[in-house]
Image (cartoon, rainbow, N blue to C red):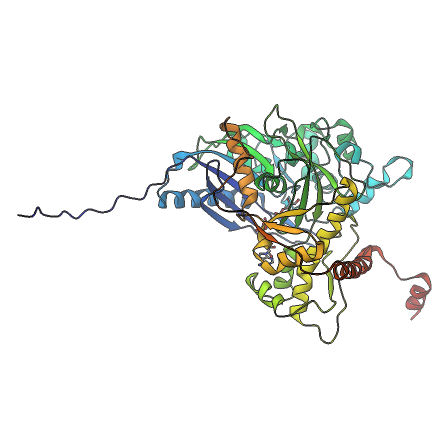
Length: 538
Ligand SMILES: Nc1ncnc2c1ncn2[C@@H]1O[C@H](COP(=O)(O)OP(=O)(O)O)[C@@H](O)[C@H]1O
Ligand SMILES: O=P(O)(O)OC[C@H](O)CO
């Protein structure tokens, strides 16, 4: 007789660790991504958009508590997904943080509550602060590069020190707290870490060298807060976090699903992408295309001071005793953000999925050039008074041409930066590693390769920023981990090669430069004297 069969439910799936988590708090969205440790394999992730608040023209803020709550929701969401695919949260051995840089938070030491909304890096309210600071430069020099030898950066509304000075001058609750010693300052990494490690009760107040290098307050050589820079900006040292390396133990998570797990890396998002792209040797470069676009060129342990409008920044320092690696950076403030504008303000597109389809229906941009200098132009121009222009419109121009010209605008801005990098470093780049939200767009990558005339190599995973933070976090807990070793078994990166002639490329670039000329100094431009008088008299 056959033995009776018993109905059994299949065992739940199992997925063994160890895992490493990475918080990626970007300008547009926050995400928590869980990787299999030491690889680029994403086990699961959870992503939520973060709302920006535009109170006045040129202002851009976010609610600091909303940032913390969104990150906590992402952590909870991703951990649930981990369990659903058979993994165990206890096997997450460590986590890293990567973040939108320069965005500035000030909070109260006693309550742990923010004193104002976070001023986001894109925010342009501080143009007048820059003007006032320029007036204080000796010999009436008004030189935006005056502080470069100390901090590697030009004076610009972009950086946290300028935003902090604006808060000191314009928000009494902040200036009073600074005077009383109850104010605490942090970029988004610091604010998140403070909250994750216990807030007002026991939250740690730390940052890493990459984020600190974007404040204009850190000395680029000593990697410590600089007394002369603090004096220039009129800011007290008591508000500043402790500067640490990018890969070490910062503190443990105080509550929630990850309670007790250590935070062992912090990197600004662009530096994290440099690590995630494994651009770990001098001479390697990457471009990340998200809200903005940022090209980082690894200059190894040497500090290269740009004479062509690039920034000198810390690339990473992977351990307390590790040698810091530096980078030259070309920053473009409006890249993917130009498509948000086409969608939200112009109604030219409904979603980002349409961009490639629309731009592909036309063979070229019909000589339309779009300079999206909404908040001035960053590298290499550093012209805070530039404003956006669209040139070359004709009766034949359609939405499709404008969408295509918007893609090309990002490509031309990258050409501007590559030209500066070539001048500063002398060696032309043979290829460019690319990543970020815009790189899902195949047409865009072809245009990028065509308009700069070099090979473009698409990253194997889109989340290189989070990957860089995960790699640095794992390095802090696993001595044997080699960051240069292959991360995955999948084949080589996809290479996109130029398909237009150098003559065509250069002609189009000259037209771009003409469009740039029309956008520069727009905000402060006035009519020539004679014409103004005629107008006033009319
Ligand atoms: N297919 C696409 N073509 C062009 N741009 C895109 C496409 N998909 C997304 N984007 C742009 O990429 C940006 C989002 O990229 P992401 O890397 O997530 O940004 P961030 O890290 O700044 O939050 C948005 O500004 C969006 O407009
Ligand atoms: O939000 P992203 O990815 O465009 O990055 C923002 C930069 O860190 C600003 O410097």
